[in-house]
Image (cartoon, rainbow, N blue to C red; front, side, top):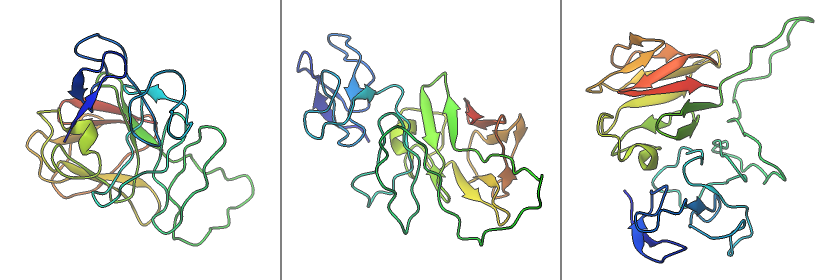
Length: 208
């Protein structure tokens, strides 16, 4: 749920999830570490480079978590039992797997795993998190979907299969969850890979 903050230029109160000021029209920039709007190129509180509020990746955040480790331009979820060190340049951190490392035969290549879902039309970029819930009212991406009326309050869940593949599970949503145009049956996992299109209600996300 959004709160009211002051525009860094004209100081008029605006909603915290805005991309532009409703009064003066200036594009808003936000600190990925402190989650506050700022002027100039760096945050006056922590020194992190400011990023466009419209292009910031939304990472899964549980309600009890007060802050999220962020890089200069995007964030992906860190493992729950370990804190990843701050990178010196933007990187995507994938959750660590609890499975033992498998030895591959020489010459056998492993396809890369997805790291995010991107909806260019709505300006939403989601870092993947094992067990993360997508929803308008509940879950780990509420800030991204709060204004999306077609998305259910608790819509879908992201998870990893036993073989390490990413899956999405529809949580009996009203407007459905789709993978490459096929609507999913509620509570039945569906695998998705890089290049696939995952549709959440009326929003198409490209798997990257």
